[in-house]
Length: 89
Image (cartoon, rainbow, N blue to C red; front, side, top):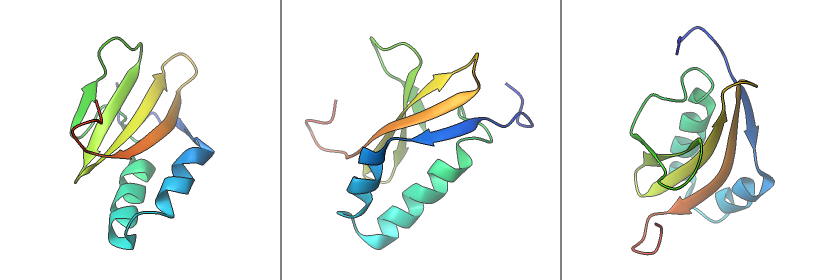
């Protein structure tokens, strides 16, 4: 993928509800990473989710951003944000 090809970013409304419940410094770090996803969704500490088609997770501290990449439509859909615990995966 080219770094110069921008993607459209869509964020599920449920993700914003999680932002209200977490500390502000964590929320700011996560939001900055989400804003960088359209530049290159394959960059950073990411891992493809097993058993899921085009689903990825990105690690930001103790939080995980889960997103889907729709390659043909050039869309990144952030669908979940969770704090990492032993039950996250």
